[in-house]
Length: 327
Image (cartoon, rainbow, N blue to C red):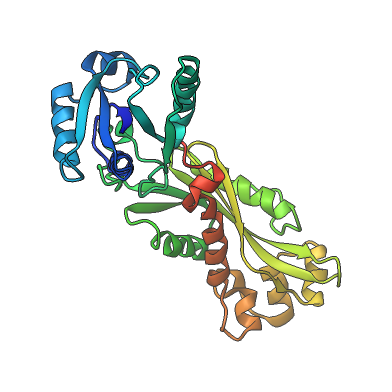
């Protein structure tokens, strides 16, 4: 029995290696269709290594996984997979699965058995975008998915606490990144209520994206709970990436006293309302009202960090949310 897969393998990166491991794990002989120089020239936007070099690199790595393999030249997308009765399985990435399904339809029309389609999950680079040969060749990544150029992240705020909280979270999932503060943005409200909090967080994020990898907006809003009529303070984080995809996350909420809510409804911001009532200056730039309410046990930075973390959940779990497509 034979398991097949095909590709250009211009730069042998983590995604390629995972596909090859999946192929060898079938226990079958593995045949790799390696695209020819002519195919590369007419179908890829970049100039890759020669067929000879790419084949040597593949042989060197595949020999570590097993001995029963063969590398054959591939000058069409499907090669002989539609007509060969010897193949039992095909290994593909999520983005090329439809091609394998088309091959199976053709095999059935040719009176052949369908191939088992083995779909390999996409491997993300350090920046949470898929690894690709194009990105490696451009000098953005190395073959392990580490960023060579820093991951650029913008945040629209004049509050250093938001910037430092964002940096604190990003340091747990990335290494080579830089956060830049954008103060050139306009908001139509300084104290949002309810759903408007999401709108303003997204507006902040978009304003900070520019030519960066990510733009981030963090907004604190007041949400009314309909069962008791009480009001909760909830932080909302919006993250937009260079492909214009937006994800959202919120912090846990905590109750705000009625006297502060009355001032907020009259047009005051939370920090100024707190100063008016309790004489504390610019509390939102320090521990926040949550710090005062809990005598320092919780601070605003904890809530910001929580909202940012939750906004990145769909990016870390990209395969569940469709964020693992190569762009």
